[in-house]
Amino acid sequence: MKTLCLIFLTIVLISCGGNNEVGRFDLLKQNHAEFKITLDAEEEVLLFADIDITYKEKPPLVFNCDFYRNGEYLFGGGTDPLMTTENSNDTKTINDGITHWKFYGKLEGSLTATEKGNYRIITTLLKNKQVDLKINKAEIVFVKQ
Image 1 (cartoon, rainbow, N blue to C red):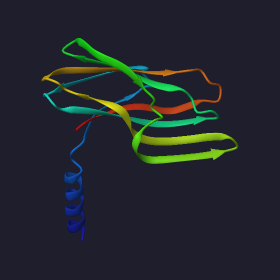
Image 2 (cartoon, rainbow, N blue to C red; image 1 turned 90 degrees about the horizontal axis):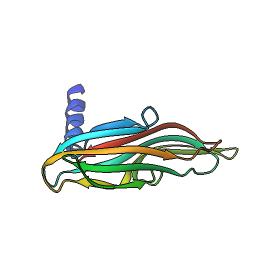
Image 3 (cartoon, rainbow, N blue to C red; image 1 turned 90 degrees about the vertical axis):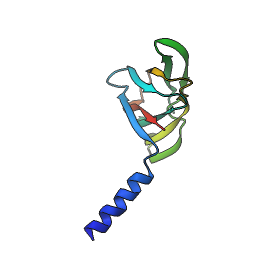
C-alpha cells in the first residue's frame, strides 16, 4: 500500500511540475526586495501574493515592481496584492466588523523574457497608515512557468 501511495504522489508531483517557485520575499521584513533570475527568450515569471491581514476597511496596498534586463530598466508598475486570481488557501472571516483574510493568489501581470538575459525585479510594498490594519504576512512569490 505504501508503494502505491508513493507512486501516486510521484505522478501527481510530476503532472504539477509546470510551475516552479523560484523566489519568495517577505515584504514586512524587507520593504524593498530584489529578485534576480537568468531567463531564456520566451520564458515567463509569474507573480503571486501570499497575504494574511486583518482590517476594518479594505486597505489600499500596492506591490510596486520595477523590471530590468542586463541592468537596463524595462518598465515598472504597481499591482494591488488584494486583487488576485487563482486563489488557494483562501479564508476570510468577519467578526464584529473586523475582517481577517488569508490567501495565496496570482497577481495581475508577469515578466516574459524577450531575449536571453539576466533579469531583475525590484518590489516595494506601498501602504497607508491605517489604525485598524494589521499585516501579518505580505510576501511576493515568483514562479517560473
